[in-house]
Length: 320
Image 1 (cartoon, rainbow, N blue to C red):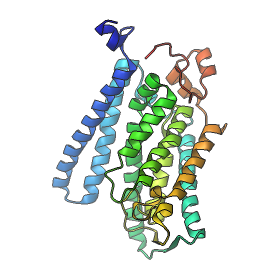
Image 2 (cartoon, rainbow, N blue to C red; image 1 turned 120 degrees about the vertical axis):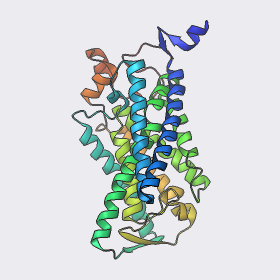
Image 3 (cartoon, helix red, strand yellow; image 1 turned 60 degrees about the horizontal axis):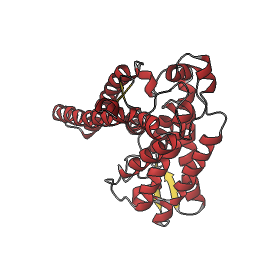
């Protein structure tokens, strides 16, 4: 094998090298966003402005980087990465919102029924609820989009081409868990659960070739957990919240100061979501995404269903 063959196939950069190049662009995106957000904090010395601008700048930088990658190497529009506004995008987002909501409500309900937590109304002025709730809504929505673009976006998609879906899910989910090791109050259970939740999120992408369901799931889990229930979100507590909570149960069940992701009750919800997403006939790729990802060929579109097991996608004869 020549050096050219090592890097290129049929005149194009191999998927494995596109994966590594996209990771470099992800790191650059975060560094640029950090510098820009620091400038915003100097102009507007409020923590909310700093956080909000950082996540927004990350989103813009990631979308710009992926647009460049998909245009140069795939000769396709940015929508192929998974945030295309196709005819079913709103439906997919609502499905994700519903699944994420059911997951966290089931965990909160289980904690209540088992006597592990007690929730009570938090008496807040309506203006404070609306202002903070709206701010947190936008912040967590953009943050969820950022994380999904990083862990289920272009780098993950090139990893699928290189390792196959199963290998890509394993690697991406492991890094998703490890990326949260810097969070306060993390435990081995929280790390395993965070890695584990990467599996249903990845399955949702693989079955739809779209990021709308993963973004919806990710956002609702965090928003309901933090703003509605008043529980810590991956070690971070949001205040004020609609409800105030007292958690009495063991940390290995409830996650304690880390939040539900650190407890085994969440493990059950995560596994349940993964099983549903894997087997449900309602989770499937839309016709528009079939055409966008696999091309307009009727044969490719007809065979583009679920590709969880290793192997190339339909319409792609390029080896990794």
